[in-house]
Every structure is written in C-alpha cells, then in structure tokens.
Length: 50
Image 1 (cartoon, rainbow, N blue to C red):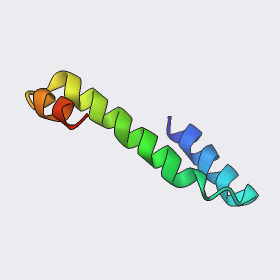
Image 2: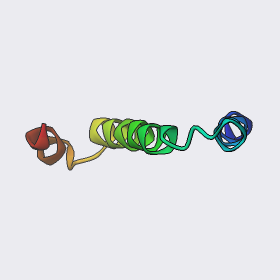
Image 3: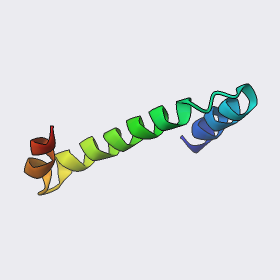
Image 4: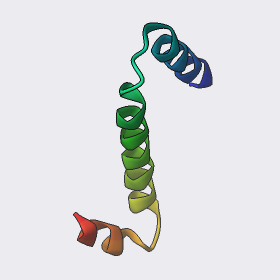
C-alpha cells in the first residue's frame, strides 16, 4: 500500500499533476470515515452528517 502511494506521489511530482493530491487525500479521508462508521459507537453521528 505504501509503495503504491509512493509511486503515485512520484508520478504527481514528475508530471506536475499536483491537482490530484487534494482529490486523493479526500478519497482517503472518506474511506477512513466509512471504516470508522462501521465499527464504532459514533456511527449514528457520522451517518447524520450525510
């Protein structure tokens, strides 16, 4: 997983695709939020956001 992210950031640096960084970061944060919503007691509060 870390090697994939490393290659992705290297690609962005070499080809000057810096606009991709916020998109990737947002998708990663959304994934973490969904995983946290499944396994914790705060799930009803997170679902209320959406």
